[in-house]
Every structure is written in structure tokens, then in C-alpha cells.
Image (cartoon, rainbow, N blue to C red; front, side, top):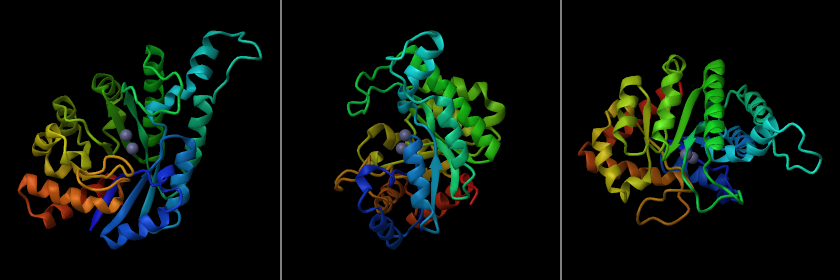
Amino acid sequence: MLFDTHTHLNFKAFENNFDQVIKDSLKAGIRYINIVGTDIDSSKKAVEIAEKYVDTFASVGIHPHHIFNYLTSNVILSETKNLGPSSPKGPALQDDLQELEKLLKNPKVIAVGETGMDRHIYKKTRYKRYGISDKLINLQKKAFIAQIKLALKYQKSLIIHNRDAVNELLEVLTSHLGGVTKLRAVFHCCEPDQKLLDFAIKNKIYIGIDGDVTYDKKKQEFIKKIPLDLLVLETDSPFLTPEGLKNPNIPSNLNYIAEYIAEKLKIDIKKLKEVTLKNSKKLFKL
Ligand SMILES: [Zn+2]
Ligand SMILES: [Zn+2]
């Protein structure tokens, strides 16, 4: 039995078949699934799907990449008072955080996230002029801190996303360490970075490993350093399909990932499944 701690079955890729995908996963022994939101709409969808199945859960949050959406309304509007009626006006971060808060009251919601820091320039993005600016990074920090506070307020776990932004991520976590250590948290799809690992070990933060471990040499070395009691598994479906399997990635591929890791770590597959399931339940207080 396994727990897929991070999927996006709420995304367009599964629009027409999430029901079948979940049934297939259950048959393949993936008993527990966490569906993770990245903005308000996908968070709502995650809750909607989770409510249909016993051991399928939802996490709600605003991904740092989507913080770009708020730049106009939050940064420009607050700095320039008279923009006039023709100015572009996106959603306000504050309003969406209130929407998130409403979703957090649902018992199927086990975590806030994904939230965190992201300096990556994505090739595929819904934003026309996407770029990393100081303003974006500052707003990402603000949104991240607000979501840490929401997790504390509602006693939910925290799903932390980081891409190419280890320094900023650790800066925020360190400055809010009092709160963070009260939470159960995971570095989802953890970058193979010693600083992240040291921080995780010191503060008992779980580490999520995905199918990219099958082709990423750095991750293959990295997993050997992770204490077994902090390891959790995830597919990040529909992304990060393990090498040799067909797209889109699906939760049942977690078996393949588990077998790959067990072989690399030279531990019994049964033991790896047991330990990671136990860790995942602890992470989400289930
Ligand atoms: Zn992520
Ligand atoms: Zn994700």
C-alpha cells in the first residue's frame, strides 16, 4: 500500500478521466492520494474531487509561479494611486487568500499548498510577459508567509514548493521558524541541495521524491542521504513521468518509483512501502 502525497489530478490533463485514474490507482495499491491546488480554481477542483472518494484528499494553495497574476493589482495599484479606468486590474492577493481560508474549513483538506518560492523561467506558462523581478519575489514571500500563517491557524500541514530559489525559501522559513516548527511540512519534489536537506533534518521537514529520480543523476545520489523517517513519495502527476513510462504520469506509477528507490537504497521494497506510508500519514496527521 502506498500514499501518493502530491498529484494534480485536478489539472486539465485529467479533466475527462480522473475518475478512472483514481480507480486504477486504488487497484494498483495506491490507497491514499493527495490532490494539490496551485491557484483558487484548481484548489476548488481538488476539494471537489477529494469529496468523492474515501482516501483521496485535497491541499489548497497558491503556487509561487501564479503569484505573477497579482503583480498588477497588488504592486502597481498600491504604489500608483490614480491609474485611471483603463488600467489592467487582476485579482487581489488578499481576496484570494480569503477564498483559500474558506476552503480550509473543509475536512477533506489536509494541507495548505503548494506554496513557496520559485525563480524558474517556465517555457510553458499562461502569462504572456512572465519574468522574475524583485517585485515578484517580494510578493511570493508575502504570499508564502500568509499561507504559513493559514496552515497554523487551521492546523493543516504545509506543502512547500521550491525551484531555483533555495536562499529565499530558507530565508522565509528561518524568519518564521517558530511557526514552521509547529507545523508538519514537506519539501515537495525536493531539489538535491545539501542546505535544504540540513534544514529538513534539523526541523523535521519531510522530503518528497518523484519519478525524475529515475533519470536525474543528482537525485539518485541525493536519496541516499535522506533519513528514511523523512522520506515520502509522490508522482506530481501529470508531470515528471519516470523514465521509460508513457505520458501523462499517473499515481499508479508510484509503484515503479518505489521499486526504483528501494533498489537504489538496497532496502526491501516491503519495508520502503511501509515506512513511506507511515511517514505520509504522520505528515498529514491521518
Ligand atoms: Zn511544485
Ligand atoms: Zn505540484
